[in-house]
Image (cartoon, rainbow, N blue to C red; front, side):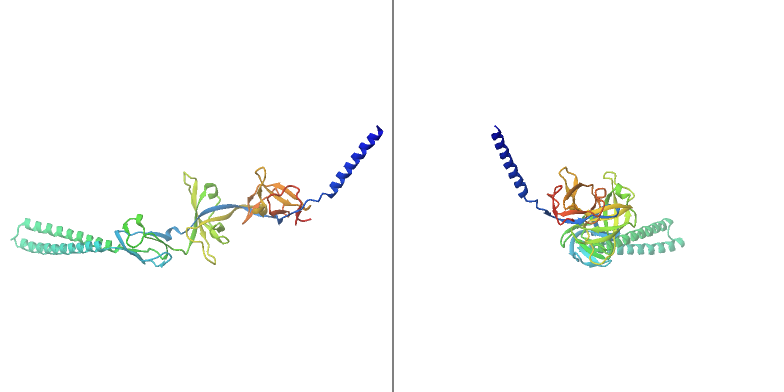
Length: 363
């Protein structure tokens, strides 16, 4: 019986020794190679984000439409052409208008002749009436005839001036100096003489602005002269300074949005094209402490909350939940989760778990 117990103890000893040797030979975990970036403590101000469209000033943009109906003989300009004030940009077939003007001039000539005859008749009748030869009725008829022909002459003169002015409207002229933005009609097309058949859009591009619809809460945080930075997704890597020029004192009752106009300040290099969608960021309110980390450092955690991975001084990963706020370009504010001075994983950020060994992290 004692011999059996000794045998069992020997077997258990061998098994323990084998397990011990397995533990000693198990390789250590391979550190994950990550790129880390510092968390920077700084002072921040709240940011108002305004999204809108680049446009000329409201009184420096015009859709040009003929004031007369007809067929376009020729569109004189192309998109991008520079035009001066008064430049003819399109011509409407004016043959019917010229004929109407000639008829009006003929009617005016006839009315003038009739009036001249009535004036002569009145003078002659007045003379013979004073000699006692003509009756009072003849004088009254002559006076009435002169007044009637004078009115007819004035009416014909007005009609002739209207006809001549209408003929001149067959020429579509630019009311301002600027650049042709769009050509909306081509030669040979019909126009009806209303704004519905505009031919050309012209704008003065010396000054541009960002026109945006802004929620009422943000509208109250904007003040005239407040400056910020404009960027356009279609033009990556470029930015422009903007300043608040106008803030609407009212909002739309249906949408709760009001209009803000931001002047695009002069700068070297090309300006954003008219019609481009842009986003402006303007600082508002008092400065407050913040901690900035790259936006790429924040990931969605397993519980759905934003989190980041701190590259610990112990060479390990430490996961922290954060509540990111607005920061600067490409950064977010994580004050409350970090104090500044720490380093956070930037690439890669997915797949890192609490306690993972990191290569490249500070010792």
